[in-house]
Length: 280
Ligand SMILES: [Fe+2]
Ligand SMILES: [Fe+2]
Image 1: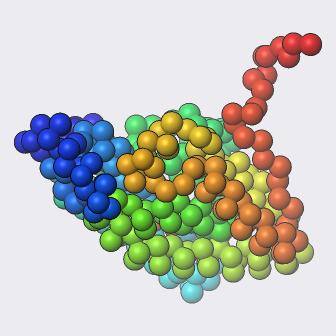
Image 2: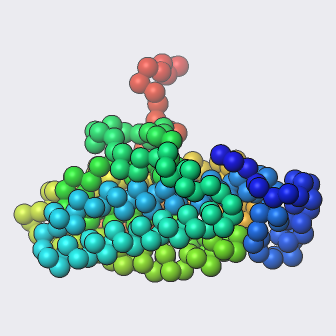
Image 3: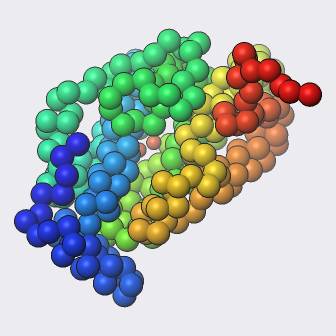
């Protein structure tokens, strides 16, 4: 990834950045970012931009396969929202002199992995989308479960951007956030409806079981050093695990109220490798 394009030296930029952070002033331009801040910021914004675009592309088939004409329009609008979110993020990257066209040209945002393969934290391709966007959406139950879980999970993560030290991103996030709330409401409506109907309850329960470990993996490990550094620079507000627990509690309350059973979740970092020998 190309680094900070500013003509000022890293120490000059870092001094200006620290002064602004100490005074609680926003960082606005690459001239006020240390190399480290710039790299972390590009990385975080690319993660969102690539996820928005890959997410939108994954929904495209569901415009045609939606169950009613009303739903065809709703899915079209969701696709449009996601492509707009992607574009809004790529524009921010362009404004920070990141070579967006070169980046996007090299990526295949339509790429998906086999449904039965669990990625965990292992990467599937060079783009920076969150891993959950590599799984295919194969049924209407999966589509609405994705709205219910992933749009909600993203919403919880975006809460931290609302107080980011990077001004342009913070100012962009409110509109994206409001649109994500409509996607979440679409998920809630459908998951509840499919859960309360005895003829579809099993299907939506199975979908919950399939997507739960994937969505719980999006938040990252507790107490990660990278997350701690993001917080020191004001690029994040909370520990990964704190965000995950807030999200999980909200999902559990809703799902259980609709008669669904929450799957048991074993964090990746607590799983014992199959070939390990436990002493004693
Ligand atoms: Fe979005
Ligand atoms: Fe969304």
